[in-house]
Image (cartoon, helix red, strand yellow):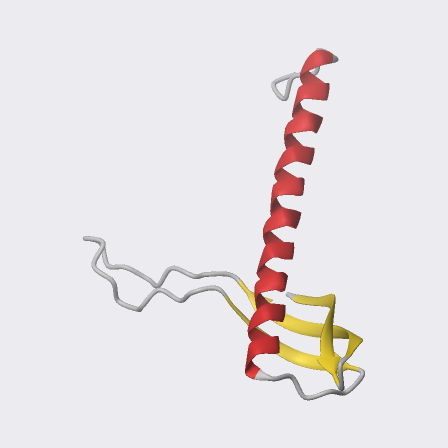
Length: 101
């Protein structure tokens, strides 16, 4: 998944707004045999910075902070999605709609 996050960096005592584009991938469970023994290792979720605009070099601390902001943003989007689905389900139930009909 490709996503963009707006953040900031400090240069010459000034706050510079940046737009950071990432490739993000979910965690993945490696394959298992019939007894559940791992055949492949599990992989953690991850991200990779593709582009920073304007073109500035991020320090390690800035990159870490911006990646943390990205994961917080993704978690918030996930929570919002869960809430929206629950609200839609509750609305359907109050209208008497049933998936079995």
